[in-house]
Length: 74
Image (tube, rainbow, N blue to C red):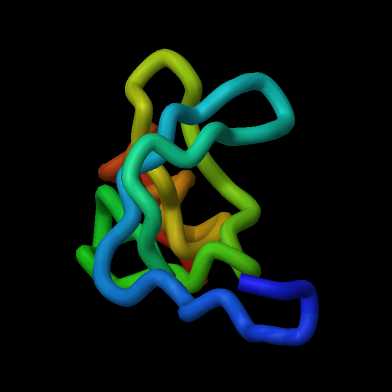
């Protein structure tokens, strides 16, 4: 493969190892699933995760629902 050929994008769900402020790709893919909602999160949009629980979250609201399930949001 030369530098002008495109590398095919990984398709399907990725497996990540969540670190402090970063993550490591264990199995390539284009998305991960939110631990709360189950919605797919494209890797380039992934902003929220928990290192201890090794979970990804789709939004700040999902993080709140995970850790404060009785909290009324909105």
